[in-house]
Every structure is written in structure tokens, then in C-alpha cells.
Image 1 (cartoon, helix red, strand yellow):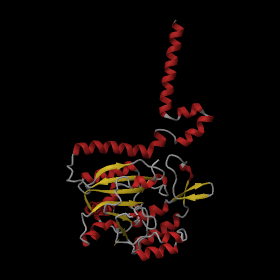
Image 2 (cartoon, rainbow, N blue to C red):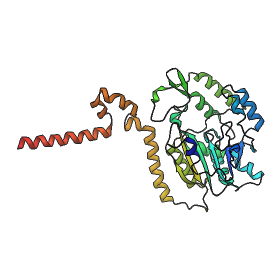
Image 3 (spheres, rainbow, N blue to C red):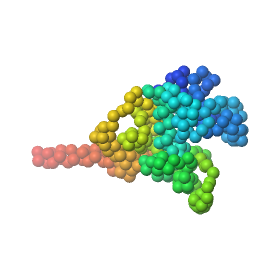
Length: 341
């Protein structure tokens, strides 16, 4: 089975010229391993190491793994930073692991990443599935959220995003152990429990509305694979982002992997094809948001009930119910034929 690193770097050649965004102490493309990579981070090297020393969850042995930062700046403005360096169009790949969801202006980042890459260059990202991490109870991100951030040139999470991120933050509990994520479709989502600090988050919201406030980190986007693809195709149709989709893989564990390629030439926009694909993705998003009440119960619940209530399990699963109805109808027809004979 492929490791998560294999999945993230599936379309990356480590010896080709690339950028890794904010790897902190856990680079996917370590320079010390011979990877031809530049590090892009909002903090310089010494600041990152100082912050790591103050973090009790980071072992001292890992601090040495924080590599020298080559470009300092907001990842949303990667295009402007590299433009100042005269390096636009110079890179074969950009790798980002659990960074995209933190970006206050995702469209600007995607535009800058495309500018940084050579034609045919690849943007590879690992993104947490909002259903399987501490965003579990949050409403998924709308395209309008990204459009507003782009057209207002947002440079930090706005008060509404921060209230949403922290007012609905939850943790996954395995017995007495708290975790920030669960296994998607392998663990019981009922074990997510929301934090109980709504009043404090509302007070912080009001304070931020009343006066300028410092940058506060948060997940600005809550996504899952079909929703990300929908927004990306919509942005391409609107002429805001020009990437080809190499692959958007299904969620594994609590994350999914995205691989986008800068086209060798501008891709034509086919309105009819776009709206066909969009309709399919909209239905997929609606299904993912409502699949438990509409389609079936989660597989762990089915497994639990099948042993104790086999008939109830069949009735609560539409696919099983349809199969059962067909069987009952076939048996009824056989009984009728037998009585007539």
C-alpha cells in the first residue's frame, strides 16, 4: 500500500526544481536528502526554530530538521514574492501539505502557483477532509467565500471565518484520548464532540468587529474532494484559475490528495461540457452532504445492527431494501404459480 508521502509526491520528480510551502519540521522534500527544493514560509528560519523550541509537542531532535527558508512571505502572494526575485515560470513543481486550507485568499494562491510553475509544472497538495477533522461540524466552503476573499484582497481570516473555525471546533475521542482527526468511513463520527466555549468565541467575534485585530491562524476552507473539484472547475470557467486536473484522489484517513498541472497552452473553455460536469459534481456534493439520511447508514452502524437486527438493517439501507423487495416479489410470484398449478 502506498504511503501518504508516495501519494503526495506521485507526480513530483525530487531532483527537478521545486518549492515546498511551509513544511516546518517535517519536509516532504528534504534538502538533506538531495531534493532540489526551495522553502517558502511566512516566517524566516530562525523564527521557525525559535517557535519550535517553545512548542512542547515538538521534540528538540526535530528542530534540526527545520530547513533554511529561501522565500519569506504569505503563500497567497507567492506570485508577487517570486516576481520580485525574477523567478516566475522557473519551477517544475510546488508541494503543499496541509497548507491550502489555512489560506485566507485561495484564488490568489492558485493564480500565483500557476505563475511560478513552468508550463507542464505540477501543484501537489494534501488537504484535510473537513468531515474527518476538527472542522467536522462546520458548513463546507462556498465558492462565494473564495470570491469575496479574492475581490476584497483578504490577507487574514475575517471575523466570521474565525468565529466559524473556533466556535464549531470539535475533537474526536477514542475512549479518553482526544484527537484532531478520525479515519474517514472507518470510525464513528458520533465520537466528534464540539468544544464548549461558544460565549468566548462570540465575545472574540464582537471584539474583532470593533477594532483591528492580529492575525489568527485557522482553517479558512472546509473541503472534501468533490467540493474542491467543483470549485476548481468553476474558477476555470470564470477565467480566474487555469489548471488542468491530473488527479483528485478520494479521501484516505483524514486527508485527500490533489494534483494539478499548468497547461502547456491555454485550455479552451467549453461551456456545454462545463455545465454537464458541474451538474454531476453538484449532485455528488449534495450526495456527500446528505448521504447518511438519504442513502444508507454508515458502515460501522450497519455492521453493528446486522448481527442483532438483520431485517431492520436491510430495511434501513435502500440498496438492500430494493434487493429484498425483488426477492419477495419473486417468491410471491412463485407461490401464485404453485397455487394455480
